[in-house]
Every structure is written in C-alpha cells, then in structure tokens.
Image (cartoon, rainbow over all chains, first blue to last red; front, side):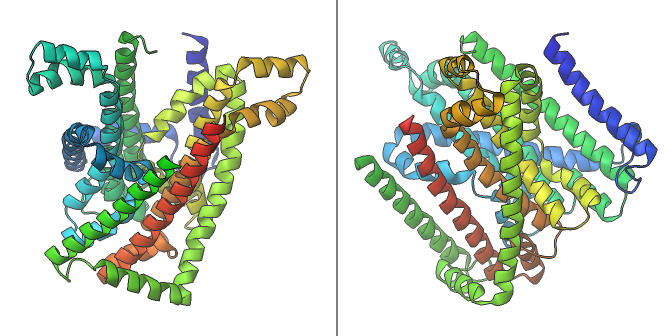
Length: 250
Length: 248
C-alpha cells in the first residue's frame, strides 16, 4: 500500500477505534450512540432479517426515477439550449445562482400542492440534479471542436448520427461529471425529503427511529446510507478518472 | 460595460419570466393550490410587520451567522493545513469530497443526540455543510499558488505563519473567496434543513408548521423570502468573485 493509503486507513481506523473506546468506557453514553461493532452487527441482522427491504426498495425506486428524469430532461434541455443562444443567456443567471438556493425549501410547498406522496420527493431530487446535468452537458458540448462537426457534415451524417457518433462521445466525460452529481443529488433529494416528512423509505425509517429513541435501528440505517453513497460515488469517480485519463486530461 | 448591461438585462428578463410563469400556474390551478405573486408579496409584507415573525427570522439568521463564522475559521485553518502538508492533503481530500455526496441530513439525528434539541445542534449541522467547500477551495488555492512565490518566501526565511499572512493568503484570495461563497450557500442550506427537521423556532420551522396549518400563503411567502435572500446574496458574492478573478 502507498503512504497515502496507509494514512487514510489509519485515520478511518483511528476514528472508529476512538469511538469504540469512548463508547465502551461510557464517555459516550448508550442513549447517544452504540459502540461501532454493535452498529455493524445490528446492520447485518437488519439486512438478513429483511425487515427494511420495503423501505430500501421504495427509496431506491424513487431515487432511480428522479435520476432518470433529471438525466433525460437535463441532457435534452442542454442539447436544445446549446442551439438557442438567447434563451441560454437569459437562463445563465439562474444556473449561476441555482445551487445557492435551498431547493429543500420548496418541499413543504410541494407537499401542500401534490399531497404527501412520492411525487414531492421525486420532484425535489429531480430539481436538485437536473441543473447539474444541464450545466455539465452544456460545458461538454461547448468543447466539441468545430472540426468534428465539419467532418460530420462532410460525411453527410444525419443529426441523430452526429449526436450519437460525434458530439455525445466527445462530451462524454463532462456529461459523466453531471451524471455523478445527479446520482448524489438524487440520493440526497429523496432521502432528505423522506427524512423531513414522508410516509416511507429509509429516510423516514431513520427519523421514525429517532423519534422513538430506537438507536439499534437508527445507527445501522445511517451507516447503510453512508456506505451506499460513498460506494456509488467512489465507483463513478473511478470511472470518470478513467475516461479523463484516456483523453490525457489527468 | 456592454457585458454588464447584458447580464443585468438577462437577470431582469429571467425574473420577469419566472413571475409570469408563476402567475400562469396560478391562473391554471386556482386559489386552492397556489397563491398568486401579488397575494404572496402582500402576505410577505404583512409578515414582516409582525414582531413574532421578525423574531423567527432573527433566530434563523443568528444560527446561520454563528455557523458561517465557525465554517470560515475551521475551513480556512484545515484548508491551509491540508494545503501545506502534502501527505495529509492527498490522503484526506478524497475523503472530504466523498462526504459532499452523502445525504448529510441523515447525520442530523446524531447531532441532535449529541447536542440536544438546541442552537448548537443547528449550528453544528450548518458547519458540516459549510466547512467542506471552504476546505476544498482553500486547499486547491494553496496548491495552485505559483511556486516562485513560495520559493521567494523561503529565500526570505519566512515562518509558516508569515508565509500564510504575506504570500499564500494574498495570492490565493480569489479562489478562497469562491470557497467562502459556496460555503455561504451551503451553510444556509444546512441551518434551514436543521430547522425543518426538528426545531421550535426559525423560518424552517415556520415552513413545516405551514404544512400542518395548510397555510399556502405562509409557505409560499417564507419560501419566497428564503429564495430571494439566497439568490440576492449569491448574485452579490458572484459579482465580487468575478472581479477578484479578473484582477489576478
């Protein structure tokens, strides 16, 4: 292992060991946090018993729906905006300030309008992700060298062929950055809104467990979410780095 | 001058467009679901006239201000440390980046258990959000400082603190400012989310309370206040940001 790898393992291991010692010594009392090994054990039992499967399935399906929506709408919108210069200029201030505005603030409004179903959650996750996809896709499309477009014209490729064989592959790494963000935002949007107020899903189960002082459920679920989001993000980052490396950009 | 005019025009067009969209949605759905822009503005004005409401705004702003101050101090300190110490920086940076992708809201119950349902829990949650971009931007700012500047500092036998004060900080200001700008937005999001989940005071609490009361006007007014505040500050900070970057 490299020095950096050792360092990282040491930091993570050190934090876990510290928590373990503090919990066992009673410095952190049981009501605040169970010892790390107990959390892992409870998580294992929970996954084996399958009592959270319905909640996990609900969260995953909503996340996936929001992700597909934000990718589909985002990429198409970016392709259209790339052509419509005036509209793009007008929307530019929106994109620049978009992530400074707390999108979650719209959640109560959506609940009142659409009811407390899946729609408000999917909508929040979609809103969080779509602009990242649009901005990154536009960035990728801007960088397509005009020689590629000219070549496509010389070869008399149709618009669809140009998009499939020239523009999209070239803009690929940039779009992937957008996809990576959209995945993270879909997770954050769905779980976050479930957590604030909802009728089911992992976020709901965590806030339910919190309200009932049920640490044996709450901590394993939090751990599950941490592991899942770090793992997914890690895989996408590695993929992105590979694509960039192939272009010689890293 | 011309570009500035264009950006002001674009901003105004956008605002008018959004208001128009809002009015059309209102005409389409009717009174039950939405409040019209005019109704919402009137309601907002009436809200600000109430002392009770101003108290809630003050509550949110106070938590936010403390959280932001802490984020800046901690973020700059950790950012400079990781920027200097190559090994720590390389080891910890990817970890900090991956924290960004985690739904941090799920960590809030842990803070609530640790700090109790109090101002400190809210502040801590805001700091978790705000500190990350400040660390990351400061770190990369230090890494991107021209080597010749650092060598000059070494030749002059500057201490580490003098190096930060006289060389790294001035050279890195534009990028650090970007971190502070993003940190501002995220701290605001963090403190609001904390209030929305569990709190008896503040704008986030008012929002969630509005659901129970089914008070559409209240919800839309508070949302409007939050959005306008966040967007306005962000526009100002972006403006300063661009100027700093252009100068260097």
